[in-house]
Length: 253
Image (cartoon, rainbow, N blue to C red; front, side, top):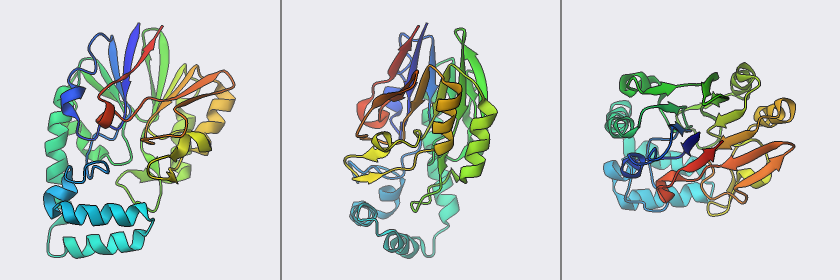
């Protein structure tokens, strides 16, 4: 059995179309939307609306952790515009491309920049969306927990620690624990390019200690200090920044 796993697709529909080649199934751990590409500030919803110069400034402020100034810049740029309608329209266009590229079967959960309310509109019969749920793939039980925890970035699908922990608890004991964010381990959460810690989940780490899955698979941290480590019997693996690499992680048994 061979399963390919991707995360942080961020608009890379071209490579997504071949991500399932040679695999029995594709697993997607979220962040399909590209709001702003930190490597190329000309790509994404934000520069499409406001230009690369404003995107440069937004990245500069966020990287310096000057989040209130970044929000003030956003408020000025959005003044007089229907923010909700503009973003939703752009996300719908990206989702149409992303979901059309998914092979059959695909098992997917949300990332922190996704808009879960739109997914039923685009997920076809070959795509199973899971969040706080389990599914059997090739004789192994996979559990899925989507979204991220609340941060100063205020991305669209950030939830409380309590809500996230409840979804982890609902999944229970599984062979493969699939999440968008990593467990709360510093080496797995630190982004060496952004030079900051992303939020990992303590509830997820506790579940790994308690239930001992074979694998914990996740994304979210684009350039992690450590891409993989073992916690007890569990192999914790960042499956990679698919937007940049175009290459899925392969899980075989």
